[in-house]
Amino acid sequence: MAENAAPLLKILTISDVERSLLYCSRTAERFSDVNLIISCGDLPMSYLDFVSSSINVPLYFVSGNHQNLNEIRQDGKVERSSSIGYDLHRRCLRFNRQLLIAGIEGSIRYNRGQKQYTQFQMWINIFALIPALLWNKLRYGRFLDIFVTHASPWKIHDGEDSAHIGIKAFRWFDRVFKPLYHLHGHIHVYRSTTITETVYYQTRVINTYGYREILLDPSILQRKERR
Image 1 (cartoon, rainbow, N blue to C red):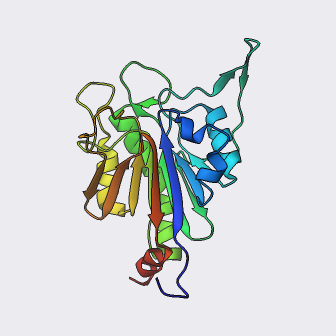
Image 2: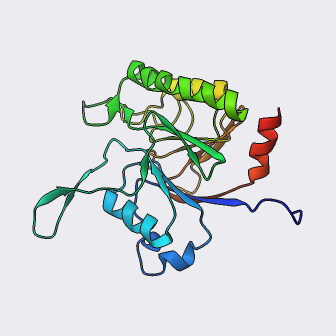
Image 3: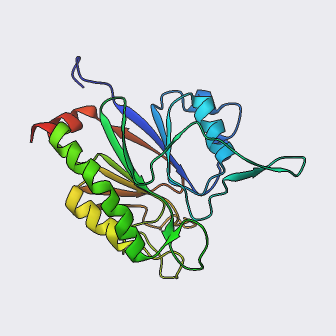
C-alpha cells in the first residue's frame, strides 16, 4: 500500500444467529479494528446494541422476517428495545462521508408474518430507493456501494422452499445499479460446502450468516467517481 493511501475500511457483517465471540467481554478487543457494523436481520436488538456499544462503531441494519423488536425482560415484561443504529429500510445513507449504503428489510411472503413481502411489494420497495440512487449518481458519480437486505436475490444463495425463495427485484437491482457488495442473511448455513459468496455482474453477493469481516479499499470508491 502506498504511504499516503487511505486506510482500509473494515466492515463487520452479522445476521441470523448470535455468536459467542461477539457477545462476550472480549468483543471489543477481538474486533477493535472494525470501522462499522452492518446487520442483515433476524438478530435481537439487545444483541445488536451490545455488539455496537462494545466495539463503539456505527451500526446499520435491516430487519429480518423473524426480527423480534420487543425484548422480554427477566421479570417477564415486554418492552421495545431501542437500537443505537440506523435502519436502512428503503433508505440510502452515507457512512464517514464516503460509503453509500442502502437496504431493504424482510423476506418473501410465505405465511403472512411480519416483515414479509410479495415479489410485487419488493419491487415497490426497490423503486422507492431509485430517487436517492439517481441523486447519488449525480453528486458522487456512482449509485451505491453496499446494498443490504435480509433475503437473498433470486437464484443466488436462495432456497427452494417457500420461505427462502430469493427476490427477483434484488437480482435486477444488482445488475442495474452495480453496488460493490450485496450483503444478505436469511439463508442459514449448516455445511462447509454451502456457497456463501457469488459475483453477479459487478457485485459481490455475500451471505453474512453468523458474521463475516470485509476489508474495503476506499480508493475503489474514488475510481468509481472518476468514471
